[in-house]
Image (cartoon, rainbow, N blue to C red; front, side, top):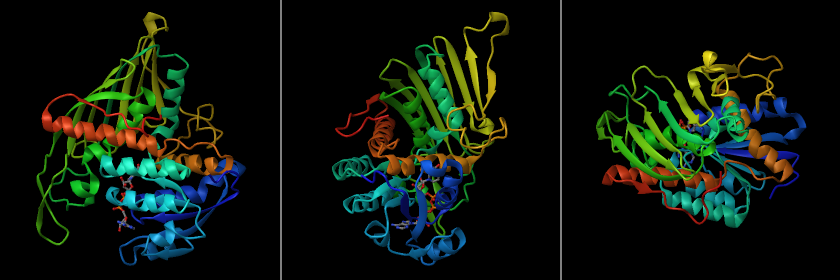
Length: 385
Ligand SMILES: NC(=O)c1ccc[n+]([C@@H]2O[C@H](COP(=O)([O-])OP(=O)(O)OC[C@H]3O[C@@H](n4cnc5c(N)ncnc54)[C@H](O)[C@@H]3O)[C@@H](O)[C@H]2O)c1
């Protein structure tokens, strides 16, 4: 579907925070990739909030704006539908876009419920449209270097993964409640929002997650509403997970969006029989590598500074050590689906993988309720890397 496209006409649904990052990425992707990606036309942006799409169109440079997302999913002049709405709106929009033969880039987590994610993955498979879910951190060069070192055998057999994603943005109890803190709209709290990213890295680097044991905690149980009332918080602020991977490795993940001292800190420690890796977002242009093969008197983690010789970093600057930033991750992400539309290859991570992560989140929520280990139910369409 879409093979050989030289021009891709994009429609974006949702004009909030992440819409800005996506737009910047579309605007600059050909400056980095040249002819390897099709030329992008920013055709239409939609948002249900009155005036939001119009303001975003003017500021970000979209040709047209609308309050009706169907004018994106059903439009003749759109090839790629980019979904950047709250989680509960992803399914309806993606399913309509697939039924109108559009390629789809959908933000993470794939949906608010595992049932909606399953329906999305199966409609997309049936419609055979190019699809991708926005797990942007796996495209990060230091993470891609980790993947390469693992595949090259530099870590030996993988034994343990310890991952985290901490933030302090929900620490203030007077921060008004938003869709992210409502289970019906978000599906889960910190576990679904930031936890889905680190679960994706665990899956990408180590492999399929077989079972999970979880504890979830709501630290601030009530918050102000934007209209001046009070509302109960029915999602987790923090989640602690134990994981067993198919290949025999064990793992643990801690996520917390009310964690004093942390500003966007996603990271992992990964250890194998021959070496280990350490990654921290606060040092995102470095990957630390420990090799058991180093002479014992100088063994230790060495920071490898990311530069043009590393995977996915080569498209940026020819000078090592200059560093890239958060918005560059979105250039890497949109380049994936755009080059898939040009060459006809499969984009990754796809909806089937997004479903797999939703299944792990669902299993973790069940485990937190029952206090028992929960196997992650295999899905007929899920499971791709
Ligand atoms: N990949 C990442 O690193 C990353 C980072 C932030 C957010 N996200 C994801 O992006 C999505 C959006 O997050 P955000 O932070 O931009 O949220 P946001 O609240 O800033 O913006 C969402 C926008 O969607 C609009 N909207 C709501 N329902 C809609 C509908 N049915 N049709 C059209 N517009 C609708 C809202 O009016 C709002 O302007 C979420 O799924 C979130 O998890 C991903």
